Length: 112
Image (cartoon, rainbow, N blue to C red; front, top):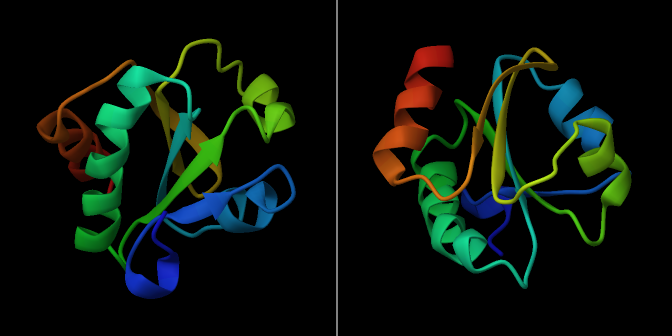
């Protein structure tokens, strides 16, 4: 996974979720995924591209649900991939399943 310093997504964990996402000003997008999930492997590169493109304007992160079950449970993530959109720390939208880039970008622009 890329990292935020290089314009890539932030690795979100149960431990840093409050600081990185709930403490973020403006829009944040989190990809809830797992390594064994086929559709997640389709969405992952799109999330990486969007993180680079919107670097400095939108906080974009990825949360591995197997390694971070508390946050997935807290937000009732039952199917992956699930993309949750937060504005100033509050959930404002969700996309479940493998969506094309234009669907994700439309949500970013809608909530930015």
